[in-house]
Every structure is written in C-alpha cells, then in structure tokens.
Image (cartoon, rainbow, N blue to C red; front, side, top):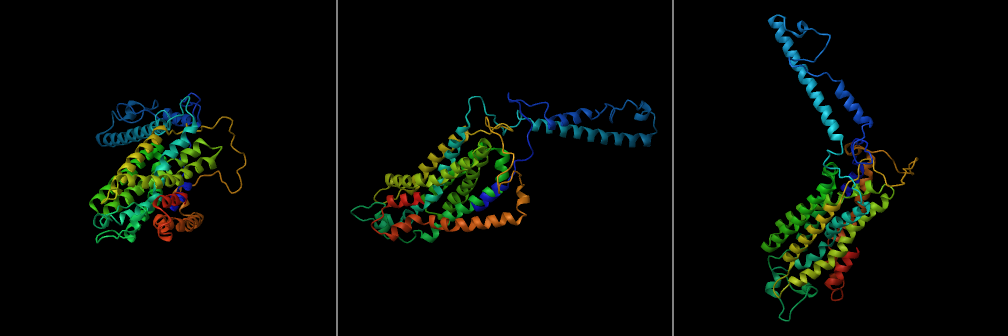
Length: 408
C-alpha cells in the first residue's frame, strides 16, 4: 500500500490531449492537430512507378532509359523511399486519429445531464468493498476451529463468542499460519498498485474497476474452496494473491478520476475515496459475524459459505461503480472554475514521470516515512479481533470485537 500511494503521486497523464469543442468534437484549430495534419499534407505521395512524385523530374530521371545496373539501384532506392514515405504518412495519420477523442475508447465524455457527483458514489462502491481486508481478523478464531468444532462441540451448544474456548483438533490451523493471509493481501496490494499504475491510467477507471471486481470476488470464491477442502495454500493464493491484486487495482482506480472531476476540491475528492476504504471494514466486520452465525451449525463453522456470499455481494457493488464511472472530456473544467495563477506553497503544478521519480531521493524519503507510519497499524489490524477477545475474555463478544475492528 505504501508503494502504491507514493507511485500513484508520481504517475503522469501523458501528453496533453487535443482541444475539444463544447459539442464534443475535435477543434480543427487545435495546435497539435493542425500541425500533424499539415505535415501529413506536405508529404509527397508515392507514384505508381515507384518513388515520390516530383514535377521537376522527367521520365529519364525516373529511370526509364537508364542502363540495367543503374536501373536496378534506382528501383531499390525508389522502393525504399516509397516505404519510408508510406510509413511516415501512416504514423502521422494514426497519431491524428489517436489524438481524436471520438476515436479514443478510454475517453467517455460527460454526456448532457451527467453529474460529476456520480463519481464519488462510484468510487465508494469499490472502496467500501475492498475495505473488507481490514476486517479479516474476525475470521481468525473460526478458522482455527474448523476441525475441532466437529470433534469437541459442547452438548449445550455454542456461539461465536464461546468458540474461543473450544479446543482445536490436530490438523487445525494456527494463528501464525493465518497471519500470512492478511500479510500477503497487503503485500500484493502495494505490489500490484505500483506495477499496474500506468496500466490503470492508460486503460481508464472502468476497465480497472471491472478487473478489480473479478480479482476481489474471485479471491473470495477460491478462499471458500480452500476452507472447504481445508488447504491453507489455496487460501493464500485466493485471498492473498488474487484478492491482493484486486485490492491494489481497486484502490488506485478511482483516485485520479476523482481529481480530474474535482480540480476545485481535490482534498475532498480523494478523502471520500480513502474514507470508503476505511468504512469498508466498519461494514464488513459485523456483516461477516452475522453471516457466519446464519451458516453455523452445531458441528460446523460457516466460514466457507460466508466467503461465497460476500464475494457475490462485493462483485455486484463493484460492477455498479464500474458502470456509472466516467472520464471527463480533455481539458474539461467545472463551471466558473479558474485555476490559480500562483501555485500554493509546497504544491507543484508540474508532473513527474514515474520512472524519473524513482530516481530521486525525495521519493524514497517519502516512501520510508509512509512505511514507518502504516506498519504498526497494519500489524495490529491483522489480529485485532482475536486480540480484543483474548485481552477481555468473556466480556468482549464476537460482535463487539467486530465493532472494535471496524472503528480501527
């Protein structure tokens, strides 16, 4: 996560796009477009006999009456010249087409009636779902009793609060084994965000949100299979690796889009996204406990069923966010917004390409500060539910522990 946050600040948005008219079409007076079209028109067109057309050259210069060896050399030079001219014309024409917003599959113009205030709900649909990672500790105690509950279940019944007192059986997982699930998820969150930041920017938020939904929901499904067959390596792969990639892609996917839509309120826009990530644990903690209670029997803990249901719920909500998100038209600004003439103190208006930022000491100093800042909190979150129940045995129920995790 630390690498994701710092690399995302360094990613640039590429060269400035073509100027757009209020009607959504390309402005022919735009400087980059007109220059490219002018260069395209000025290039000579290849003649049918080979080479470029030149009115000053006669047919004899073109090679009709030259000797055989000279004629062959002339033909080879003409073919090479024709290939170079055709290649340059193709590159210029494709650059003009690529610069046109009407041909760009990433850009989805703000249609009449579309409100930029739909973007924060789209971001919340994603961040409220992936924020469940902070609430994974509510599954730690149930996952250590999957076999023991079938052999040592008390005759008088039990609930998730008294589950802590039921002894585990040989073959049950230890807390040290389960701690790697959360650690892998957070590690691959940062790794995927750092490696795929450019891919997210180039493809747009919709593709990124859809990919994040597939990875995040797929991680729950794979983890449910791992719980069912009691193979912790499957859970490592499902929740830790696949789900971790969904975390990283989903975490960064709406951030730059929010900043584009709210240049007048950048702090509010990014704050709402981060708020959703933290609020996801506040919702997921009691939801996880309630779902496990619904699927739990006398000899079975309903962890696998809870994973399946939560994966389906999260996939649906994240797809809603992917459906309503939009990218503003190039150079779009809110009505009445005027960019400040002088940048604020400690805020630059320049962009730095990510690979150039990695070469600066400032980047690594910021990364180290953020690493130290979040390490302690992430370490506590991984065991928060079990820790609170063991520190206050009998007085902190599973539901209360889930609330404690949500508040963290």
